[in-house]
Image (cartoon, rainbow, N blue to C red; front, top):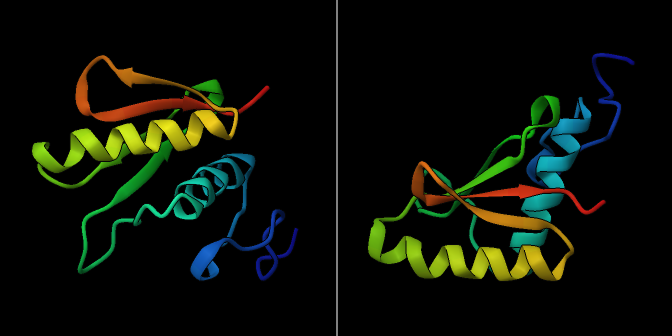
Length: 103
């Protein structure tokens, strides 16, 4: 694999997808963007996707305050379930979901 060409290509905004984990996180981001949800950025709250390494679930967080996060997480969950992901609330954080790729 060349340093210039990530094994799994590029995601949105040219984000390099070097690993299976990167590709999986980008797939979740794509589902959420397609569902009309906003990704966290410099000037806006939105979703963030992390984790997914070594068989761990991906974690999807909402960066808005608690009033914004609850309905957004419900929208994230609905979009991910429709796409075939297994989704559950994170037991340690009420502004985070855990998701596993469709089998």
